[in-house]
Image (cartoon, rainbow, N blue to C red; front, side):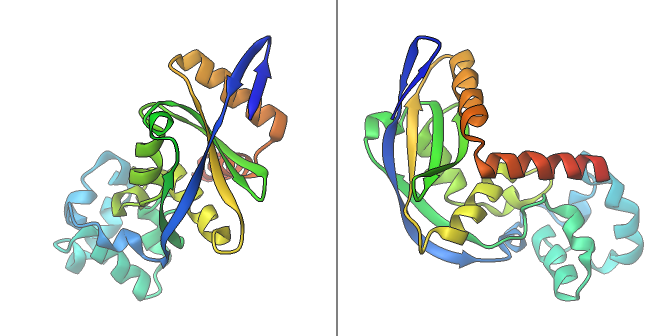
Length: 210
């Protein structure tokens, strides 16, 4: 794809998404870097500290992921307070393959499902790292409030369609942050990618409700 913006041209290169496994659930439960007691000392979880100490004292010494999963297993929605809006969805593990030179560059990427542009984002490091290590491989920590909600959101949406749709990414290598911002904003304004719009809308709703 060749994109023209204000007299400048930006070229996008295609890469395939390869599914490794799908149907991954309760990924957050594997987080074991901190106990629940240690987690609630962190700034993002201070508001949950009093309730945890009063009602879940027996879970405080457990790995945080196991403790929160225990709450979920007992039908207690309080566990969701520890996770981002997309932290308890069904995920897949996948990677991208294409031109290695392009994959190792930074820039703007798009995700297309059945030739519809559904998401665009910016890679500050490299496309390969963003997809193969992050979006395509959701870590337990990513699911938490201080994790990476965008990665969870994109992975979960890909998971919904990956087994019955044609999905690929397009990459536009860029070094200038201003160019990255310009290209991404242009794509959002022109194509209104549904996954970008949903994420922004749900994030705004979450901020308002909190």
